Length: 311
Image (cartoon, rainbow, N blue to C red; front, side, top):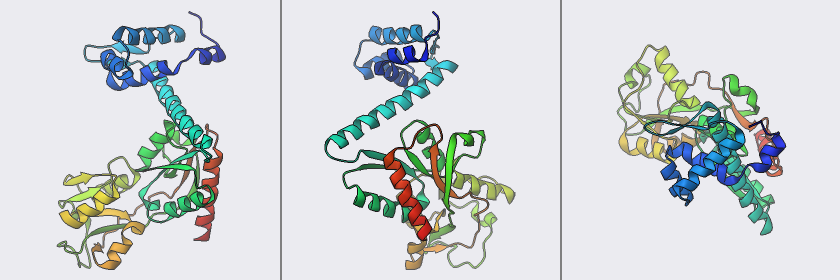
């Protein structure tokens, strides 16, 4: 069939079609997709066929193991997920507004902001708009940028991608992280005046998962020193898990000083004399260039800027 004009295409797209391609891409099975959508298998097949007919292109290839998205299908799946996320957030914000609130704000933040800057900014925003619903996702920059791309977040406080995809984002630097290598005060290396990476390579570590910027920095430091990649390792994005594994399991870690300085000052942890800071880029406010900023996001950013300027 001939290609539809954009306006005609958008008028014919249905949320159930978008939902189907999202679930089918995740499950790889028409049967499981039908069960999740609470429709019959023939009905699910018909929805897919109607969408492919409308778009004039095959979206999924059937293989012996699963239904796999074609190259164009992957593009449709990506759009579907962003549209569904936006739809869910719209419904939540609308409900909040109807109850007399201020809508919602979904933001992502790296660990460096979690102990001080972010809580203070949220507290000020809630003081100004107490009925606003605020969702916070704490993770590594790469995870947060992926969520921003899927339309799940309004903004990210983290690091901007360094590859060609950087042009898709606006970035406003805020600050730099002062990273500390640390361990429990009872650790055998506690109290050492000098250490080098070679002494730490075989010891247990707890770190952010690859390919987060902080993890890339640590892996690069070991590689530059001619050492093998760490393999005695636990990976987690959780600050609580990291701190508890250092405290109770004798592991070594690297975290922003804002998170561990109080524990070091209390004597529970010690800072190890190892510098892995390298060239970690500043973190800042990341938004998608092709997505208009919401009023709630703009208000939050104004608060963040004022707080950073006052430091």
